[in-house]
Amino acid sequence: MTEELIIELLTEVFYTTFIILLPILGVSLVIGIIISIFQAATSIQEMTLTFVPKIIFTGAAIIFLIPWILEKLIGITNKIIGMINTVIR
Image 1 (cartoon, helix red, strand yellow):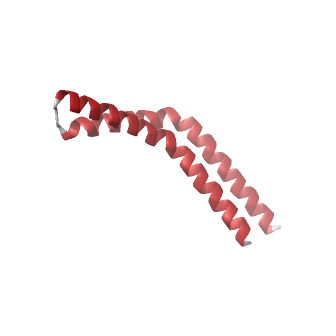
Image 2 (cartoon, rainbow, N blue to C red):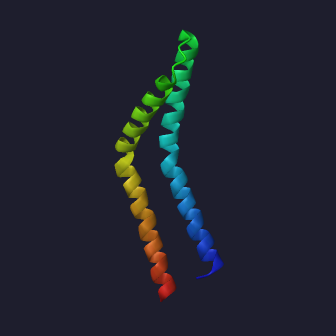
Image 3 (cartoon, rainbow, N blue to C red):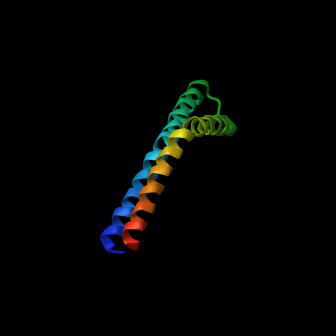
């Protein structure tokens, strides 16, 4: 196993991880900003007001994106298995 192959593999894994996490973190960020604006407008400073909706919407985003996430993970797994077969031969 060469250094170039390891670097290519790690680059692909990190890129896939970034692509999978980006929409989930984006949903959490947008909900957090909306709730912060609501808190600033109404002067409500309750900590659970930010925590609970973020968890609910992030969980919903994960459930909604599960097919896409699995597609990405299966693709990277097939690529890794293909690389293993190439190295072994």
